[in-house]
Length: 343
Length: 209
Image 1: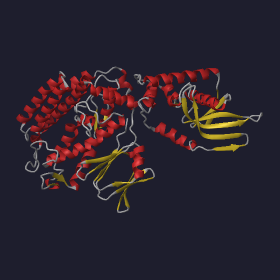
Image 2: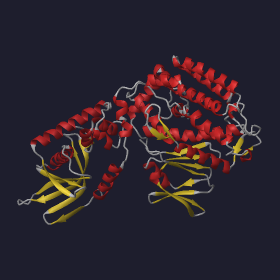
Image 3: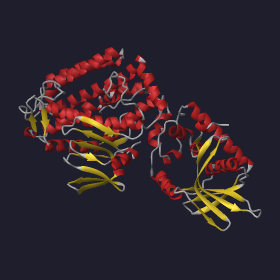
Image 4: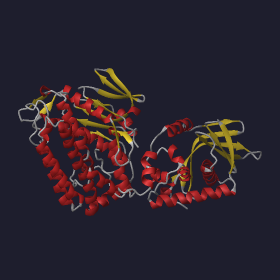
């Protein structure tokens, strides 16, 4: 399995990345600011005006290190990827499964179970840890509602129905999400999910974290040789990474939402670290972005016990583990997809 | 006889003899993970992989010699092939394979070397009676005689390899002590996947919490 290694995030505008021997050199104004051995990295993410030498790109492709280019605000632009890894037989099987409504529904069902179980757990933790600060009645009602949706999902029905339950679950969860924000509620509030563009600070944080998550999930899937474009829960649409979106579901509440909440509740992000454009879109400044990146990287180092494998591993490795378990299921080694559930 | 398109890597013989599942993971699923052992092996081979040749009296040495056998359906490279001058004036090929680690009691390395010898015989139209394995751990050469039983085992292994790859399916794992030294252990998950796991039961448990 791919080792859990670090992702190098480059946010300094005008930085230039070059290959120097077996290392990646980050240069600013012609001076080397940072130099890292390639074998300690599993990805490089460049924000905004950051460029890379073609030799570094080739070197990274050869060593299975993915380079992504995002705008300063974290919108995905492009990525550099070496030859497709894995094997054509696995991808063919994936396509056959994706064309088979029953098999697709079975995987979609597992994915939704993971998403709802983890969303429910996020609510549960806040109620348990802060009964005095949160409207427990409202949040517990949402938890009950999620539980009953889970019962419907459990008996496993058609893909369309499952997609309906997924949407309903997300609605129930996000409707009480504002209750999980425990401090500075005038500055950090949540009404509904807005993405294009995010219209408040909380949505801005969530969108940015989902982008980071997407980078990681996608890389992990690519390592196993699965086709990130062909999903089971998410229908094919040109340009949409359907399978990456499928695999992201279980991690959204567990990793991204929880991290957004703790950044707000612990006062690690400040309201003045965000600004609103004329169109209403909310953007974060460089310092805030750095804070989020550092917190995300740090969270990925935390060690958890995998509920299915019963093995300890850093959270950052979970993406690879889940991608691997999904590939093993598609190859016929496992009788289902053991989605990651937070325990 | 195999067509050029159907040739498989010589090195796969070793993988097959070590573990059928490992062989399928590498050559069907195209997984490769570098660990300490494979890195050491790679570095060791980079040294001999430079190619070229040299002559010293009655021995001519060729490095990284491309080899293939259409009969066995294999293609690859020999680390080192020495050509020994015979009294008759002919040059007799003598393959030498470099291995990390120490001599093994199994025939894995000998089979791979024997396959190289068969490739040399096919290409040069001569009989190759002997070769040697060079082990990095003790820096010793171990002579290998290509007798009929080793040849038979090599042919049988090559045939089995072609069957496995043609099937395109990965055999299920069975955990063994040797798994602990395998670079693909974490991909293979021998302990988890050995017993057919009930994912459905797991999902139920997760929902019940």
